[in-house]
Image (cartoon, rainbow, N blue to C red; front, side, top):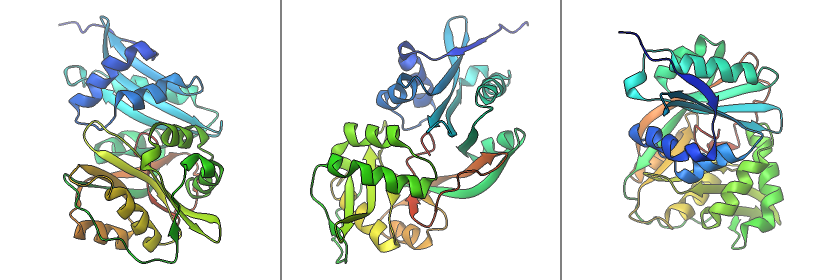
Length: 287
């Protein structure tokens, strides 16, 4: 039987409902708010595959500081897999991003696909989940939590994130601060920001991340404060695998490893950041 052809085109805000159906069918955590952020920014590149008027696949690229493209949301409807949909989407988007550095967080299955596109491994990330977090006693620490409006320190948060991640992500940080100000935690020492945790609502879990800190102790303080606002609710945290102490602590308070990702880069790793300060990521769709 002859297969019906499909087309690739730019995503529009009117495609959010269709995109949500794809991500929800896979059990992913994105909300309409996430899709809106990805598509609404004209600087991003968001593509979809369409067959007879039905959205059957997607891929997105957030462009950070006109330097780094972050690939995410590579989805194909189950009924249309094996037809080269994802290959065409990726080939098309990589051509559009040829002048930029490119990174992504791949699943183990996706790792093989991206290797064929000349991606190389950087480091693994563990997804830790807790379906009903319990209140955790606060810890004594040298750093003091700042109780204030997050936007007061938005510039410092953006700067610290840039150091740890590798490029400026102003649009992402402002999105998280604006949409989820109650999920922002800040550590200060000597009137300077030494760490922060941001967060967002999800389709299945509350997501904590990114988390940037000077030490594992600082990361635990930030996460503890965030968790204590989410008692009895489901939480997901994506932790760099080299943060062994933090992973052990999360396990001790009821988190379990659900899956893992491999951070990958295409050609050269131009923007490695400082991973010693980076404890948890914003999510595989954001970096």
